Image 1 (cartoon, rainbow, N blue to C red):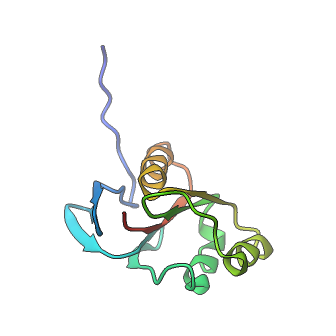
Image 2 (cartoon, helix red, strand yellow):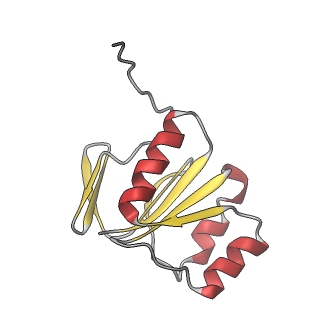
Length: 117
């Protein structure tokens, strides 16, 4: 079996997650998180449209983690993303982190907005 080391350009993957936290670049971060080509920042959750809409030209797809279970987005956020022509995939936070990491390792233009589990 051949092993290949996964590399991530300048955008960091999610190293780990757990109850109320994420670890990125070996640093624990609490609360909702936004990872994109612009960097790592805290995210204010579903009411924070502006930070997501600002990513429009930086990504092909936005992964939104809704916590421990998949949940629908609030209508206002879903409509704002549709109007801005931002493709978003909604899933549980663990699934969103894993999927984000996989596509990031493939060199895709992705972002992650995620609520803690």
